[in-house]
Length: 262
Image 1 (cartoon, helix red, strand yellow):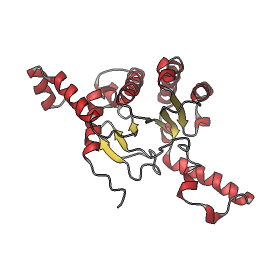
Image 2 (cartoon, helix red, strand yellow):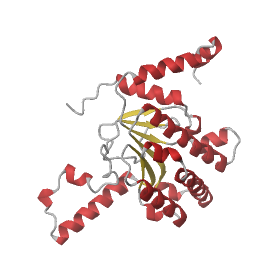
Image 3 (cartoon, rainbow, N blue to C red):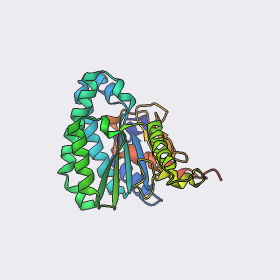
Image 4 (cartoon, rainbow, N blue to C red):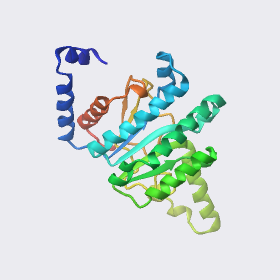
């Protein structure tokens, strides 16, 4: 908590500040696609003297809160960066913990009535065949169950890498060229995007990308799609991310002038 927030809490007006900030944010154009890099679970767990599993489990619960906040604000598309292709290089015990928490979370989402009430389409982005069979199965069930929804979109970037996504798209396009069903001169940006993991989205380009934990890089997150995204880096570990933090980064986004290279 910042010094400003501590002063507000001491004065007993912290809740009033939060409500004012929410009204202020809601009165302005809202980002329609927000990407979040969920970083800092391990460091937060160490700082609190907790186990790695406890850190990831609390971080997973925070994702469910984030979904609530985005639905409350009317943010149509949320893309979360959960696990990269590079993360498979971590210790086997840690990867196993992440996959265990992922399985638990997906089972909860399968039973979550919000998915149906709000019409949330859930989609995995990444090389999902690298994941354990049980996690693959749950992701498939979620995708099938929500495939007809289009009010909101929740994209889970898992076993994901931005470079891998581009390579996978190139392989598909190259195959079509070799077969003669596509001419090289027909390849443009619009066609290329049809082969990306985000091709199902009405707006695949995030308006805003947020990364927690103090790191200031994308780490391969939506490399193609983020060309004109507004970036916000927060010095807070993911498990400590709050609704007021989300409101603040949205307000920062709203204050920026988006020129798209013009």
